[in-house]
Amino acid sequence: MSVIEQKGMYPEFPRCGKPHARTTHYCPGCGHGIVNKLIAEACAEMGLQDDTIFVDPVGCGVFTYYYWDASHISAAHGRASAAATGACRARPDAVTIAYQGDGDLGAIGFNNAFQAASRGEKFGCIFINNSLYGMTGGQMAPTTLEGEKTTTTPFGRDSSLTGHPLHVCEVFNQLQAPVYIARVSVADTRRIMQCKQAIRRVFEIQKEHKGYALLEILAPCPTNLRMDAMKSAEFCMNEMEKEFPLGTFRDVEKGVSGIEAVAHPESKVLEAKPVPLVANCAELFDDGERTPEAVDDPSVPEKRFKFAGYGGQGVLSLGLCIAEAARLERRHTLWFPSYGPEQRGGSANCSVVVSGTAIGAPTVEHPDVLVCMNQPAYERFAADVKKGGAIVVDETVPVNFPPPEGVALYRWPAIKMAEDFGVPKAANTMMLAALKKFKLTGLSDDNLENALVASFKKKPELGEKNRELLRKASQA
Ligand code: SF4
Image 1 (tube, protein in one colour):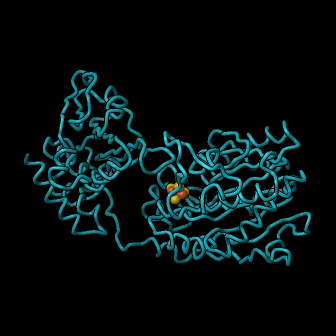
Image 2 (cartoon, protein in one colour):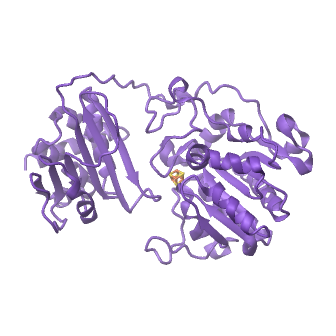
Image 3 (cartoon, protein in one colour):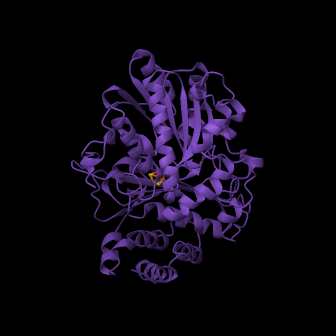
């Protein structure tokens, strides 16, 4: 099907210097892509494109203004429901739809969304629940399941430390004002059809200006679940639905209300289930490995690293390697990625902290060691490196200004070495070789090598090949 045939969407999505892009920025298998299409179709089929104001969130859904051919307002993080309140009050004749994710609505924006629902503002809120923060790299969200591994709950969410999953529909269903509350899923074809009906219902309610409507949609995030598209869809059906049962909690006009809603005959389109405890989520994520506890050693000073370059150059993996080597050495360590809404391409960086004692903050504003794979990385971070620290730049990077006084600069041919070895993708391994050769990590060579090999767990032959390249490059 050509993009032009996709109702309600622009024929081209000219974003990020890609003037004629016809694909969305979503990862393959992402639930957002399906929901975006359903929303666009529903809006167009109901003849509402000229009347609709979409309020776009911060998160993986941030770029909907490139896709839906209607009016848009971009809200600050968590503020889509607040902005939607303004929009629907200023334009009571319009159809206002806020689009939010579970980090955006369930965490930072929860009070905005909850109070708007409590006031019965006349807008529809479409809320994507994929059980984690997608755009920022898969951290725990309020909706993360117990036992689910995320980058901030690497041993699985432990409710005694981080609380229980937040049931947004059930909480909002305690309010008097909302006229419609439902939860659906896009994990398979039948559910997608049900989701489309529910989205149409939200538009219908807003078209008639009946009141506040909340539609939660369970959606797979294969990238951060680290599963393929099929497995992440199964995760939605087999694990998320146990915690977040599908159903229409309330549809006042149709007589579905309150706690009976999940069993109400009117909710037959959306089968509801009771809420059992999630028993096997931990097993699903448990790969059998237990991370050894870090050992306190105050004689080991804290060392802060920043790795920066383009997405695809492996800077995040390089940072993970250092964190893994520190873990193998029983140090305290943190890895903190940072990138834009597109997980591939664009700028990416990560911070790593290694210490002999507990670490306070994961962010690194003044690194001891900075690794730059491209020019923007050097220009952005070089001036922040601490006195006595070091900067390693790929030799292709123009050094437009000298490093700060007292900071060593190493120019290293990582990209060229990788090409000369016939493995251009291994430029990050070459950078690791520089860190090893110049002894910039404070970690043992064995642990650096073993961490590198461990990063290729699914392809052990590549791990050994990279170990060999690392040894050769660090002797250069
Ligand atoms: S990171 Fe997850 S939620 Fe974000 S676009 Fe990729 S699959 Fe979708």
